[in-house]
Every structure is written in C-alpha cells, then in structure tokens.
Image (cartoon, rainbow, N blue to C red; front, side, top):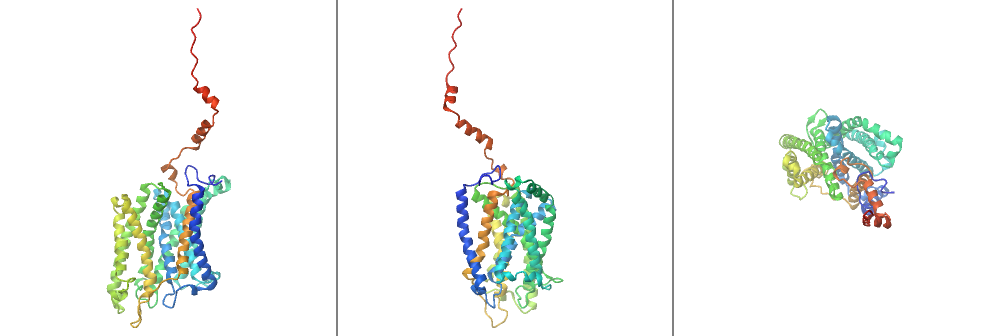
Length: 446
C-alpha cells in the first residue's frame, strides 16, 4: 500500500526506516507539545519572561522563521513574475518550506499570547494604529496563500491524482498560480517590513530607533530586503541537507546556482544598505539623543561589539562575496559555508532587534538585562523544527516535490523488472529444453 503512494519513477527508503525516523522526530515533537500544554494550562509563569523581557525567545524565533521562510515569496516572485523558468524545479520545495515556516510562526504566536482562545481578538478588536495589527492580517492572509500553493502538490499524489476532479483542480490551480505568487509577494513585503518597523518605533529603546521615510523607519525596508536575500539561502540549505540524507541529487546545479547568484547580489546590496544604516545611526542618530556607539555594546559575552562584526561582516559581506562569484557557487564547500553563514546572519539580526534592544539599559542607574529562557520556552521553540522535519519527510516520500529527481536518478523501468521476474519463474523443463543440444542431421539415403 505504501509503495502505491510513492511518486512514479523514484525510489524511497524502506517503510520501516521511514517509520523509525518519524518516531524519533515525533518524540521531540511530543516533548514540545507537552511544554506547549504547560504554557496553555498553567500560564506564562512557565517562562522566564519579566518586566524587562516582555518578548523573549519566542518573538525572536517567530521573526527568524518568517525571515528564512521568505524564500517562498521571493522564489515565487522570481518564477512567476520575473519569469525565471529554471526555478520551476525548486519552487515546490520553496513553497513547502514557506508553509512550514509560516505555520510555525502562527503556532509560536499562539503559544506566546498565553490564551490562544482569545487569539481572534486581534482581528475583531484590531488596533488600527499598530504595525502588529497589519502584521497579523498579512501573516494570516499569506499563510492562506501558501496553503493554496501547497494544495496542488497534495493533489498530485499518485492515488489522489486518479480522481478526475482532483486531477483537473490541480491542473487549473497551476494555471493561475502566478496570481497567488503576486499576492504573496505583496503581502510579504508589508508584513516583513512592519516587523522591522516595530523595532524602529519602540518608545524608549534607542538601540532600535531609526530615522525613515514618512512613518516607516529604515528597519522596515531592511527587514524585507534581508528576508528576500537570505530566504533563498535557507531554501538552498534545506535542499542540500535533503540531498545529503537521501543520498541522491534532487535539483540540477544550474537551478541552485541561479538562485544562489540572485541571493548573493541581494545579500550584497542589503549588506551595503545595512552598513550605511548602522554608520548613520552610530554617528548621527544616536549622538543626537545623547548616546555613543559603545553605549549599546557591553563587555558581557553576549552583547559585545563582536556581535555587530559577526552579523554584518562575517555573516553578511562574506557569504555575499562567495555567492556572487561563479567559482564560489560551483565549489561545494564554499556554497555550503555561504548559505549557512547567510542564514545565521539573518537569524542574528532578528536576535539583536528583539533581545538586544531589551537588554540595553536606557537609564544611567540601570544595568544590562541578561536573559535565559526556561526549558518550556526551549522545548516549544524546538517544536516547530520537529514538525517541519516530519512534514518534509512525508511530503518528500509521497508528493512530487522535485520534478528533476526521476531524471537525475534513473531507475529500472517496472516493465523490465516484471520481464526479469517472469524469466526467473520460467519452468525448469522449458529452460532445459531450450538449452538441450540439437540432434545431429542423418545423411539422406541414396
């Protein structure tokens, strides 16, 4: 029954290995679910959040998965709007990763509010003056778009596709997918930007304060820019990890190199903009408010000046320079290093824009606020990771995620295998008769 669900022309691991993997990752998932239930039943006293840290690790995880999930909207934009046809061979996986990231973000928010049954308040009693209201609306709508983009992949399962209605529905949805890609890019631009805008307009938090255009601080545009630059790197990274685990090539090199090249130039221009923004903030904005650059960095091991160098230089400029060079993209080690550094860089950016903002003292008599999450926070942060691994395992096994897999990994056609089996089952007498020597010809009588 399991083999009948696997896409045609590809090979998968034995069922027992697949189930074993699900069980192992499922144990981690259940640990996170247990911690989540503790937070819902007993309340947010299960966390280490306090008056200094009202956001804590959950909001960082939320912003990080939304940033790395940006590969879905940007790859869709490149494929359907710009017309980069080569990306059709990786767009399915980008959509799957985006679906996992955005559903994880909504799950984290459901845990963070402490009372998920009141989550609908943000829609019914919306604060129209808050950027977070716009984030909630766009985030929810874009998750709906990702559900619509992911649905045709489910309908292309071997058994589901046999139903004429589902077959025609999948085909028709593919025909209009450009509309959803454009809608997703529009929604993502605003919610990615508004998440950065929140950091820029926080009252009494000079570390995140930025000048800007009208009501939008520079961080609004930098957040969208970084998500578009580093999201595709995360897609490439997960694709490479999947290939390493499956021990087969799933996407051709020209597809990976094209996406890496575009991501590299986006990352380079973002790094230049980030450096300009940091320089202006450190030399103009902060001094105008009575601060120096080193007032925002401490000798403690967590928030030293090293974190700025790591984010902008090592995890920004360096991977960008690797990805924009042809040799860097074609060298396996360099490509791995670049995409890993880029993903670390965007996650580190979200870290400082959530946690360092709250750690920096805003009064002369206040010291730095250090924070370490409780085990419940750690478990619920790992929960989406386990959930994502399970969904990737199921989707890879039963759905045609990678269109080039069968071409890159040819296997013996079923017809040939059946013929071999029939030959092996041929009666012995027949084989012996066929192998018997022919009788000698007798000379004709005169």
